Length: 141
Image (cartoon, rainbow, N blue to C red; front, top):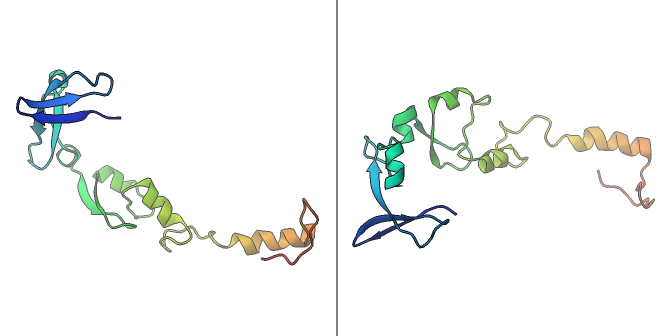
């Protein structure tokens, strides 16, 4: 569980799960570009008194996920590392796109061909009966 932010008539406070009864005075910091903000408690302000968003810090670019269409930020260095040229907002979208029902250009070439290539020779070699129970009903290929 992460910290909770509370705003009341006395100001802005942070509540941490480790000590839920203690209110710690906090402040809202805005990035230089004015697009993003973060709430920090006064203790962490000593370590980093300014806030810089990912867009300003790394020159992150807003791009569209090739699977779901959501917009997300990606740094230029990560854009260069893409082997396929596809961009995904999360691992879930990448896995869904790579599945048999996903994006055809992204699905590996060997997907969907294993039944014919491996199963038929195995049935011919081992016989068309169940290895555990010996059932010899018609096998589906």
